[in-house]
Length: 126
Image (tube, rainbow, N blue to C red; front, top):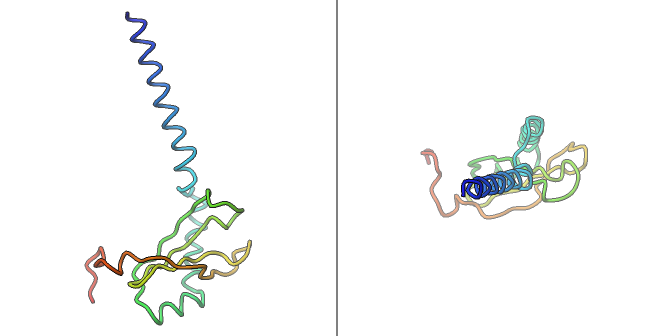
């Protein structure tokens, strides 16, 4: 009886550990940047703010936030899986590198902005 309980607990423990390791390896590792990737993303934010596309957006719309993200499941080689999002009160603009050396950031598309239907999360003055 004691052996059956011990074996059951051992099998459950191994199963939970395999599940947690698999979730970390296949899901979280592809989206959580390492220290060197965080430095690259920070430099990409600076290049985004200095880009002509960003300046055009800043003239027309109220920029609320700039976010950076990484998705290795997106496919492609470095730097294709890095992205910078510029959130305005109307929509969110997606910036990425224009070449493999990432010499310049370009607006590659846009998406819905949460700020279009909601008030800002911080108490900004209007």
